[in-house]
Image (cartoon, rainbow, N blue to C red):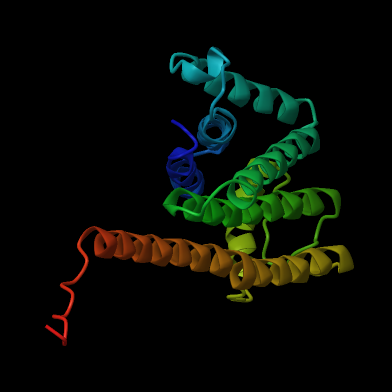
Length: 240
């Protein structure tokens, strides 16, 4: 895994997180949900932070099962000890730092290529996850902040619902099955919609446009080189 292909792994990890969270909520209980989320968080950790890392641990696959179990038991311990909001704050910090690191690689390094376009998509998905954690924190801190949300106070049971709500909001689908009630939750909802639309309209469009410009410039350079290597036949001299 290098800077030329790391966002392929990150895209896979994010899709796995979204799909795994949904399947765990659909078919399993809380302990399995914790395990699925821990597994994907470790995958995200390696995909985002393991690029060009000289750290022996990040490059060895045998550490993955140990890290998954550690994160799962650590999260379960925080929940049982009543520190579930602390765990969410740690998760929020991880997603924000991963998004910033992704943005740094996408926005401020080199030419635009397919890997960086994938990185822009990953950044969009990370934004949705950041807001999902914020919504979960708001619901735990201020109950009844949203309609049609379970009164269950376990964050891992609320989190999948807020993932759904977050991506419905950031894409401005607005189904209306879940809606904010309190001023702070309303602010987060409309601010996410604004950020999501500006992101799609400005950043992704500029990345794709730059990629196409680079592609066109490369084609023109190739054609010019070919023309210089094989000049057309000169017309005969009129005076001869």
